[in-house]
Amino acid sequence: MIFLGILVPTLASALFELALWIFIQPRPQPLEVFGRIFLMLIASSIFTTLMGALQRRDQRQRRKFRDLFVNASDAILIVDEGNLVQEMNPRAEKLLGYPTPVPLYRLGQLDLGQPLSETSVRRLDGSTLPVAVSVSRLQNETMLRLSDLTELRADQARRLAWRALEVQEEERRRLARELHDGIAQGLYSLRLVSNQGQPIEELLTGLMEEVDQLAKSLWPPVLERLGLGMALQTVLGKVARVECENIRLEPVREAALFRIAQEAVSNALRHGQAQHVKIRLFQPGEEIHLLIQDDGKGFNPQVESQGLGLLSMRERAQLAQGRLGIQSSPRGTTVEVILK
Image (tube, rainbow, N blue to C red; front, top):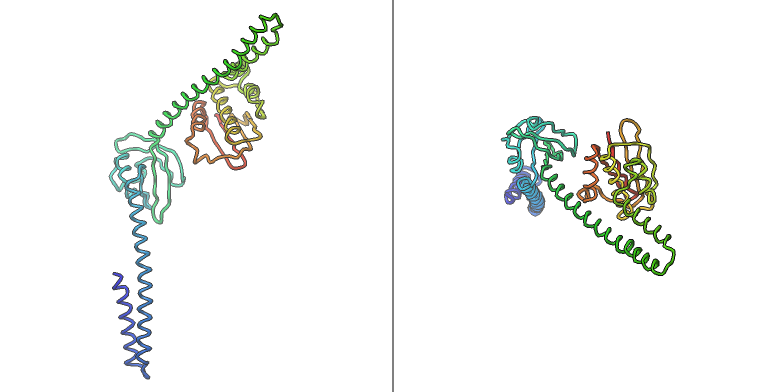
């Protein structure tokens, strides 16, 4: 192919120069004719080489795309301009069961205008499957990437269960340290002072305060008695500025929001190195908003979306029948929970 790409233009040039030499007077010098033919040969060689390199690169890219398409762990669909699924990779064929081509509407409500979304697709056997949908526009086609959320949610549940065990163990270790270093040492000092006949009221007061703080750290009683706003003010008011309206919710929802605020403040101080944290609880209309803002260094929610802390907050938001939103930049992070 490369040889023909060089030979054909060169022969055409040679015939053209021969015609000029025969029919045009005065005839050009043979050296001049051969020089032009030689230049055409070089130009044809360079052009053909470049075109060959571009074709080989295009073929490599096509093979690479094909390998990714065939071996992808997610389901991939190629949809034409008429919303007809023309091609599926093996994972999509196994997951959905449809032969191609198939109209896109057979799979359910898939919004091609949204780059990222979550929905349910309908399989050939009539069952539905929750999926995350990623939409990519090609030249005359659209590529849909479907990620099975069943497996992802099962993995998240396992991670959350493991996280719960880790939290429980860490809480036990913390309690053991508090009991040993604080209360146990205080009781030992109390015995020594009592044996020496000295006043023990001050030591007793200190021990009672330690026990009270230890109990409040596990479950603030004010959450049950006075509600979420006072609990946030009492427990987190020492490290954050708290502005809360007098809003009462079901105990389960109040507990979920309280733990989300605890996690968000802890992340802001420990990981974000924030200097200021603000908590707001307000109800502008029918929706209830919990807002935690900080001036820390931020993080990338897309990269760290599978972190156990963020997963825990999302699960708690769902438990409270709400939705969680996170915005972060190098200037700070905003965590917002909205309940209907």
